[in-house]
Length: 164
Image (cartoon, rainbow, N blue to C red):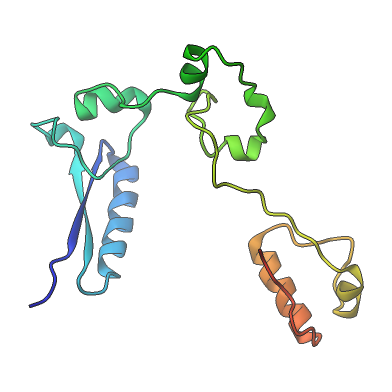
């Protein structure tokens, strides 16, 4: 007997182009699933009668949570936790690139950016020269890293890229 697929309920309040884009992505995702399928089901927030029935996922702004779920958010921001605990916290001490992953629309951190890291690139300028690459212009995007690794491989470097 085949296993039944998992339905994932995604509640939203989108319309127009945003809803068309979301629907296209959901249709593509659903069509690419192997059996047993995981299927995303879109649910318009306005159509929900029982707000106590929470979805698996929700696309919303923090201000919209009361309208979507019928309750206030079930979390406390990092600033509130630190303030209540009487602890000083300098949000500026977190690198802006990492803070962006956990801040809200006004820039307040919602949590600590744990398990996030900034990639660091070390490269061999002599190897770049041998491969015909500009040693003063290292790759700046992951796509450029891939092309650069290919050029180094073509220049007969056995291990053009490694990560850790």
